[in-house]
Length: 83
Image (cartoon, rainbow, N blue to C red):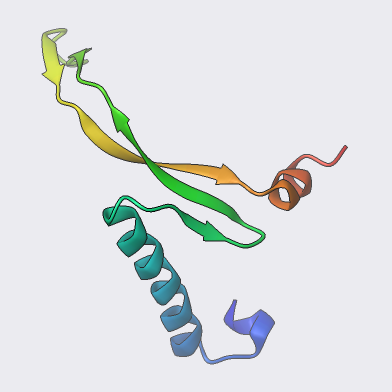
């Protein structure tokens, strides 16, 4: 990013960190965060479930949690898989 924009690496790193912090703040408040041309970040609830410890085979309880989901923008999808 620094090379593309012709910025010092410290300023480019600060810009990226700021974007990540803004997205994280919105998600922590339960809001969605939309980044134009990139996509939308949202949170969702994942229900509690049973899991298995791969080392021992023991069944364990995995608690409910809130996770981040990402829906890419159309332009990003097309860049990855042009039709």
